[in-house]
Length: 113
Image 1 (cartoon, rainbow, N blue to C red):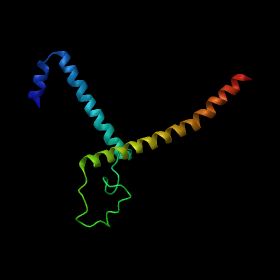
Image 2 (cartoon, rainbow, N blue to C red):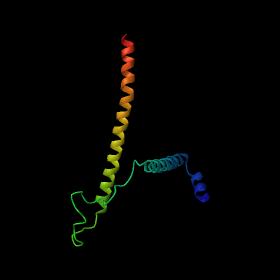
Image 3 (tube, rainbow, N blue to C red):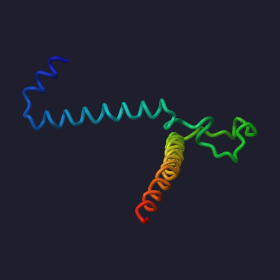
Image 4 (cartoon, helix red, strand yellow):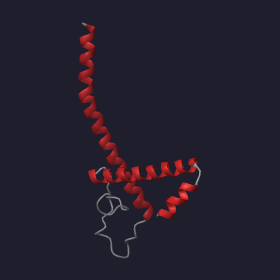
């Protein structure tokens, strides 16, 4: 670790700024993702991800069950995460409009008198 820091000190200042920016970005993203996961904003859907709800997996025999594709699992996980973000965004937008619209309209009525 000290050897790496010593090598970094020997580099030009512009390189050190780039390394510092990259390191800060990675640490910030890690903190944000861990916070969002802790709060429940990011999560994996429950059950089998690659199958649609119309498919009854219990009714299929062992020969008919195909392994879930990693690409399908990843896409469905991203869809579920973004739908959760969309729900939270709509909830935030609605709560802000419930607070700000009466406040702003009250200012307009007060100014018009």
